[in-house]
Length: 492
Ligand SMILES: *[C@@H]1O[C@H](CO)[C@@H](O)[C@H](O)[C@H]1NC(C)=O
Ligand SMILES: *[C@@H]1O[C@H](CO)[C@@H](O)[C@H](O)[C@H]1NC(C)=O
Ligand SMILES: *[C@@H]1O[C@H](CO)[C@@H](O)[C@H](O)[C@H]1NC(C)=O
Image (cartoon, rainbow, N blue to C red; front, side, top):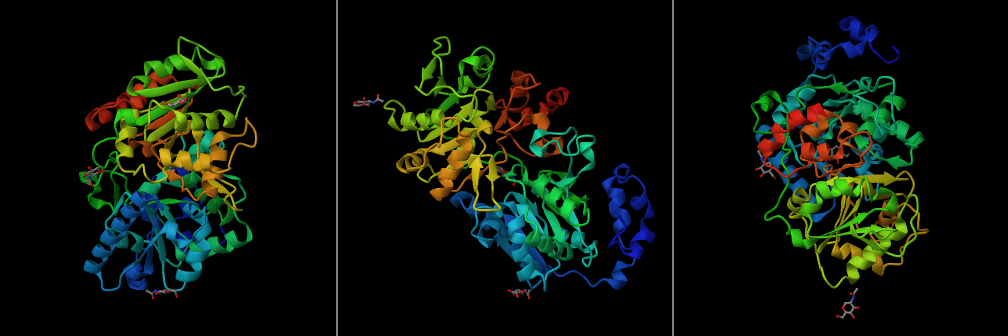
């Protein structure tokens, strides 16, 4: 356990090393990590020693946002020093389907910036960064040592999205909230690059990246833990709470003008006879009223819903045949020539009104394929896909390109979302990630993470009251109502 920990460190904080670290607040830890005479021994950190990596996406709208942030950072930098930091867009560093998962670019960053940089700071395109504060914050940490800094999230209960990690006590494991920004000191980047070259991540699926990165670092690099830094914040930039923060996060729902019209969205709901009685009534009680064009696709006719039979035999899982039949029907339909198609499970809960706002930021004449991004086999020629349970959003153009290609299900019960990802990857249609779509239930995500977003979807009815969850988390309302609803959520 003591390997690699230098002697002065032992003297400064023996309790941390030998006591139960979980019983210390993050602030106490930070205090004890500080070197009291750093000002004498440590030269000041220069801006140009920081490499900033914006976790960007290649889609036109997102690229523009990342470029705006880069410009903002360089403007701030030029008023602080004449030597500017490098600001990189993650999707441009390596042309690789998996580069959004960060670890694949680490060896590259170590090679190119290892000699003349001290820190790599990562942030999202919506993160607000106060560069001077960031510099002061990083300065507190001895950059000849390994540091993994961020705003810590942890699981209160073990969760499926983290493969039930640390099931006995999931809260012991801390992982960074990307929205607040996070940082790796160069010594850690180099160690990580070395490990990555010899032992690339072995898991097939990339599900919750922030947890997976923290776990990889902890497992492979000397049990390196995340240090929670109070200056990395996710409060709204206008909040007085952010005065001492180096970062902030605007969690308002993005919108770019008038919401997409209700009439311009076709909603396809996949169901089967087994769920007609328990899941469909929930849809009818919640979000169905916000849809103009919608159809339920089932293996069995049921006029009370009513359902549409696509002539595809029902399968227990996968539903690939059914999903492709939905795509065909969408293109051929004479009645609703909507720009957008949304495919949902019968146990997906969604706010269509929020979705309509978000869609105002995308050009339906581009091939848009939007939702919660997962990765499969990214270590070896894998692909990204939109996980189906949280909802898959297609522009008509994407559907046309998909059906014009030869890419199809290898069987009716192949996992539809993964096959679609494989197909879009082959067609060079990038998957667009939005963290507002959720493959799991609100209780599966840390509270601190959900606090700074206006969610669009959740998935699964298991062990929850889905109607209550819908009203607590997804009902259309003003921002004020959204915050007033907090107490309702806390009851759940
Ligand atoms: C750091 O090194 C890289 C690669 O050698 C070089 O491209 C970059 O300009 C250097 N930056 C500074 C600030 O010296
Ligand atoms: C936060 O984002 C919303 C939606 O994009 C925008 O209207 C608002 O001006 C932003 N607020 C700040 C403080 O940046
Ligand atoms: C669409 O309309 C055309 C001609 O108006 C008709 O031949 C065709 O059968 C219609 N297709 C569907 C799916 O209703």
